[in-house]
Amino acid sequence: AAAEAKAAEAAAAEDAPAEEAPAEEAPAEETAEAPAEEAAEAPAEEAPAEESTEEQA
Image 1 (cartoon, rainbow, N blue to C red):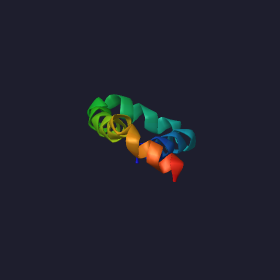
Image 2 (image 1 turned 90 degrees about the horizontal axis):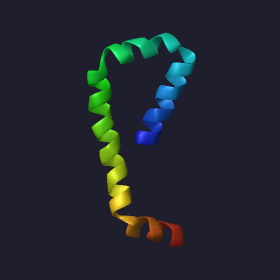
Image 3 (image 1 turned 45 degrees about the horizontal axis):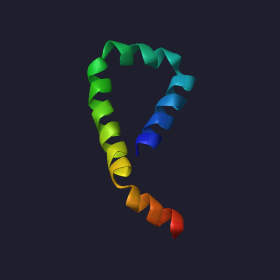
């Protein structure tokens, strides 16, 4: 999900760079998104056993 969000943000930035300004003016949105991305990435790092199982399968 985090990867998809980053890809969507990158596409939006390329299509309309003007949209980057409002994002900078509203850091509250970035702050709200950041913990969600970190939380999504953390479980993967905390559970390498799942990744190993997926790679073997």
